[in-house]
Image (cartoon, rainbow, N blue to C red; front, side):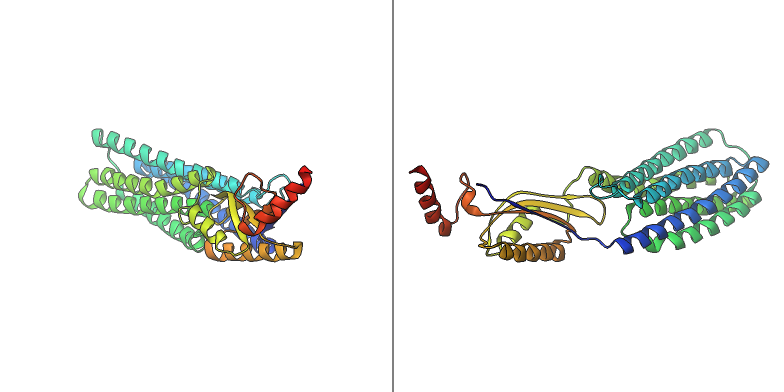
Length: 325
């Protein structure tokens, strides 16, 4: 009879995560409200002054509001109970939202480049003072949003995507300020177009790492900081671990890494096996930062088709001889 014991350890702190998710939702809500108010102002002034630059920047703001709305919805959904069906909650929805944000940034960069080429070919007169006033207001709003989001974006792809949108808006506001000053003082209509190209390049370069990391998480790739061969050697370094098979390590989200493996262990009792399991879980978390661990511990004397530890070889031969008789 084959004896197997399956152990599953999930390290989490529900109350802390709940507070963090609520705080994230509040931050995104404030950011969306501020941008929505500024969009109304910028779009209205752009139409009144016939400033194509302000209208284009307002369209940029509108796309950011839509992207941040997706992030807000994903953050809210991530707080909902999984009803026992979502093994790791709804955290991967936030990864998908971050991917959408990154892709939308790339689209915005392409559209800005397209518009810049068009303006080079057909320059139009722009009033510098309305541009300057609205751009300064936009800079203030964006700096306030950056202050709110930046401290909480280091370990969250969703908030990181939102922050990149705000940084792109800030760069756009600075570029509009510079262009407005150049147009008002020297009538340099080309300044707006030239700076727009620089901003588009900055947006694209900022979005690429976000898209790459999101795709890596959705594809369940092994984190670059963890090498499965090193993890296997680490597990085999424990005296009671005789063999490691079916070792898999992959990323669930930015801060969640999953490991599962089959281990042949030299444990005489269930209590001894429990102690080994806890020891393995603790060291895996401390050494590699792996928070989701599933280990299947199997007595080696039943692995007939696999290499057997010398200490158990004689007992196994005796057991098979008795069964054959």
